Image (cartoon, rainbow, N blue to C red; front, side, top):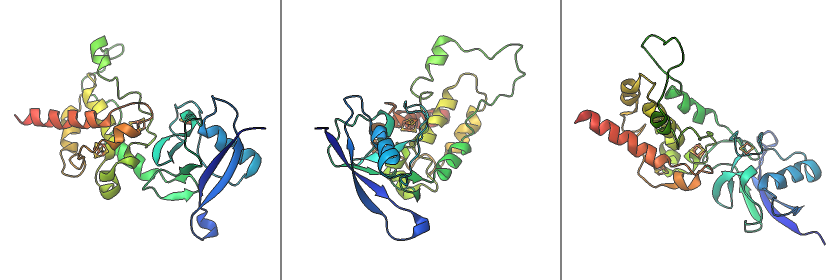
Length: 236
Ligand code: SF4
Ligand code: SF4
Ligand code: FES
């Protein structure tokens, strides 16, 4: 007999009206390598083509399938199904507006990301070749460049739930720190000026949900603390 996996999946179609609900499904277990995304794909391809969710790479790289899985944020494509308590409760990322089923509106999240100007800013004349970094300077970006902007950290942050209109949230602040630390960037002062704000940065109260939620093992709290320290040192 084939072993089956039980899931309870959030469903909501605003076009049809009505209330959101949880729908039960059972899918065959395909072995130790099976990930949650495989179960969602099975539902969509074999049981219910109306189930809507985002995914692309299937390898933990694109950041599009961030979900709330048994109450914890994570990426469906790299979450092994075998270790999950059943029925597996699959919901959209918390505190986000649901477009349909598991798809949430990420516009505000990416608007905040754009606010920190996540690109290299320079004022000095361009060198003949590339702008070089030493291996040590490059190593400063470890722990930040790996971020895939999946939103799992930001949507697990209580400060962002309550003040997400003004607090930039852990993902965007991790990226802000990435550019502050980049030895080639020449806009550090402006970047720090922009962040020195009671809401944008200082609404982080070190609850550390962000670190626990990150499927890439990154530590946004550490990055936020680094920005705060850099601002303090600049004053003294
Ligand atoms: S440490 Fe800061 S950013 Fe991370 S979850 Fe807590 S309040 Fe949010
Ligand atoms: S820090 Fe981690 S959880 Fe947050 S957006 Fe980046 S990869 Fe996702
Ligand atoms: S599908 Fe790309 S990170 Fe999961």
